[in-house]
Length: 52
Image (cartoon, rainbow, N blue to C red; front, side, top):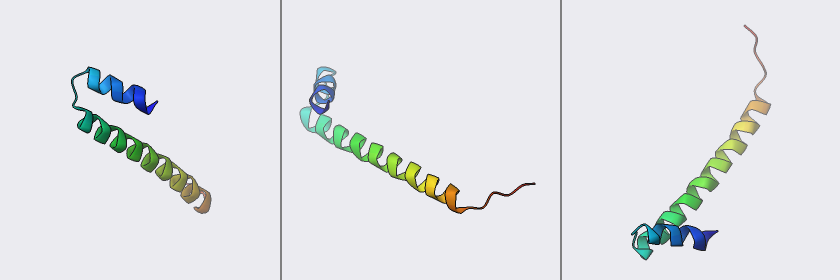
């Protein structure tokens, strides 16, 4: 997966160093989004439901 993404970026003209950095940042973003979703789920479980 990572090699295919790197190849895709390089084929588009991105220098290899930049492609590697992009992939690292994409992975970090994916991880942060997953953590945020987990935390949102916990928060919604802890908050009592309110009715208006």
